Image (cartoon, rainbow, N blue to C red):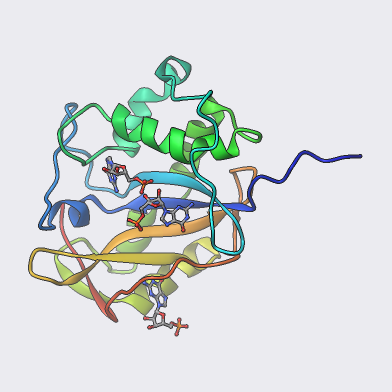
Length: 208
Ligand code: 5GP
Ligand code: 5GP
Ligand code: 5GP
């Protein structure tokens, strides 16, 4: 049997902490639908190769069509909130994510399945609850990177990657959490490769 071309190896499922997007020099804008929940939000579901590189913008003939996901929009407003300026409902962010990343997994997930897969992963992995049950709270305090990582690893069974950014005072803080997902978009896996970037050994977890 001849198999379809392997277009990518796995996904990064990336969630962002809104407090860390907003307390930077650049600041943020709430969506037109109101302040998002004080919870991690989806950034994206990104096809990746196991050598660390990744495809992008794979199909200009399959651009974002919100009418295909109208049944998912209320969940997306909750769980995939945009914080970029100027304020909008979220469709600018969602269309960017589909066009840049989603089109690169279209052989596996059509547009509706792609957004649904991300929403289902978010409901399966409750990062805030995992961290809070270990006493790691979004209270502006500093927590060790290793305790954040081991808490998540112990809860989900796989090692996450933590991306930091800096707040207005220059403090390294918890910005995004990456977990790896198999190419079906539904099962967590150990990451074949980790992104690279710097965090402090103690990082801030700002409030939102
Ligand atoms: P940044 O340069 O802010 O880390 O990333 C900018 C954008 O590049 C991200 O929003 C994402 O679209 C893409 N990107 C960055 N790193 C990765 C990666 O390791 N894998 C994939 N698939 N996309 C990435
Ligand atoms: P990426 O290319 O890294 O997947 O996505 C980043 C792009 O999405 C940027 O152009 C950014 O302006 C836009 N964007 C819209 N809303 C958000 C948001 O809430 N968080 C992040 N990180 N990017 C957002
Ligand atoms: P180790 O191999 O001991 O886990 O980490 C080696 C280096 O990578 C250390 O400087 C550590 O701070 C950094 N590091 C480990 N895990 C992460 C992570 O999830 N995110 C970031 N940004 N750096 C990490």
